Amino acid sequence: MTGRELLAVPMRGGPSADVQSGVARRAGVLWCTRHRAATRPGHTALVFIHPSSNFMGHYALQPLADLGVDTIGMTTRYLGNESALILENCVLDIASVIHHLRAEGYQKIILVGNSGGGGLVALYQNQAEHPTITAAPGGGGPDLTAAGLPPADALVMLMAHPGRASVLTEKLDPAVLDETDPFQRDTALDMFDPGNTPPYTPEFLRDYRTAQIDRNRRITTWARERLGELPELSAGRVTDLPFTVHGTMADPRNLDLSLDPSDRAATTQWGDPYTANLSPATLGHFTTLRSWLSQWSWDESNGHGPERLRGVSVPVHVVYGTADPGCYPGHARTLFEAVPHARKELTAVHGGGHYLTGQPEQLAFTCRLLREWAATV
Image (cartoon, rainbow, N blue to C red):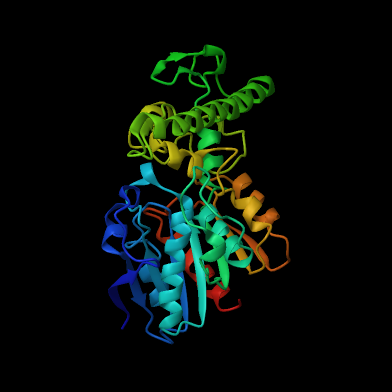
């Protein structure tokens, strides 16, 4: 019989009252679930990771345990709170879990970065092998060169995009003219305007993509300037401030299925693209000055997956769903091609959506694939 248990993993560095780190940090623990395999438990562990989502109930945990592999669904200190997230702190949280599992005797640990976890596990392994980051882009944050990060034995990029800064910029609405009012719009750059309908012209797409990067850079410049003003404004008592980003789900690929073609429908993970673009519940709408620089800034974030994979020596398997509305075949190829060695694989899950919801055949295929690949690395 397989078994499920709750793990309270001590956080490296101990508890802290840092308000950005959330409840988990103050408590000094990270919460994870473990599903133990019926055969050879404790030999190999697949650790499922996302920067802020709750993977303690991840869809692959129990099916993989039933196939003979121990699985861990971990959380970071930013569970349910991406607004204050610092990627470099998430790296420390992964290190805490790996240290804990090594101490328990696991011989092989494979990090599975699902969705936004892909860029994070690439950053982690890159810094475990070649630590260079001494602080988060907005200042503060951990010195990863002194953190003693234990490397994993392999990486899986599962329905993953290249990184949070990349994916947000690809979805950032360039038609927004006023950062306080998403309804003041530049119709020439509005993918939802009746005058701009799929299939989009090459000229529209060229200008659109350029304007998305320009908007990201404007926000980055403003965040840097505002951060520099804080010591004077607050006498050093406030080190960060929140702000809102409107229009974060406007990738032309959501409506134009001729772009990066796949089996997907013209939608997003959050439903109708126009609604998702302005809905408070979708990607990156609420953030802070320091968090923007760490996870969302095109130029300053350390979380660009392809760049980080170029410095990784362990085996990497990129697995993507051909019907995923948010992570595309082009994303998968970009990640795969960035791996500098031959110990890499690229596999399509035909008809697979982003989280394989209601897809038992695709789920079974994916879990068998991961089990068989884990046995070879």
